[in-house]
Amino acid sequence: MPRTKRTINEEKNKITDQKTVEKKQSEFVLPVYDLIGEKKEDLDLPKEIFGFKVNEKLLAQAVRVYLFNQRQGTVSTKTRGEVAGSTRKIYRQKGTGRARHGSIKAPIFVGGGIVGGPKPKDYSLKINKKQNRQAILSALSLQFKNKNILVFDDKILNENLKTKTVFQLLKKLDLNDKKTLFVLPKMEEKFIRASRNIEKTDFIDAKSINAYKILNCQKLVLFKSSVLEIKNHFKVN
Figure 1 (tube, rainbow, N blue to C red):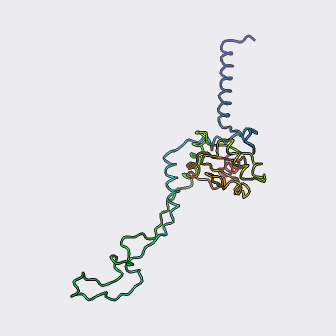
Figure 2 (tube, rainbow, N blue to C red):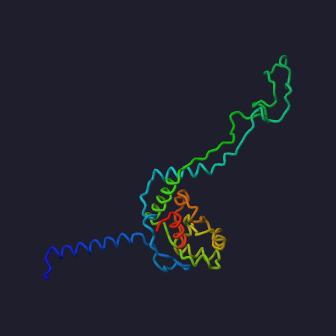
Figure 3 (tube, rainbow, N blue to C red):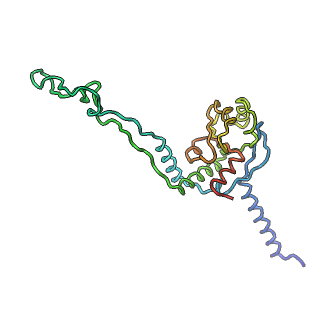
């Protein structure tokens, strides 16, 4: 059967659509690096997590809530009624030529009470689960969009690491002078001990990530199992 012009156009459209789909799929692929900083394989990242629509207002709210919740609010000063001291009138009312006073605990005396000083206060704010989830996904997507995410192979966590080895790995990938957050599948003591003395490094486990931590770093380093933990945590297939 001869190919008509319409048939040829349909075939071209199919090829174009297929290429478009492949391109979209390849947008969420990152290389996985081994201990010497060489590319080992490619890892497909879930679009539902790293392709989430960024909500900047929600990110600002989530960061504000996180920072406020770090405040302990335990500082306290004593008023004149709480200061320990004598209640005797310090000198007679008249005849001294001085202003009349009744208590050594008055705020104008050294060791007296504090006027308008801080008292214990609860500064905590709340954000609902849905908002918190969307803020985390927005933060991850923003860092992915800005090309600030790297993926390490899980075998690195099982190695008998030295600080020098980790430093050389970070230096090869141009991470040694950047504020880096390692997202671990769990708090791996071997890796943390080998890396914690390296300047500008921080650690968090995959289930405890939050928008502030994700945004407060220049580079976000994931492990293959960390990506799996994040997928399971957010129930993404």
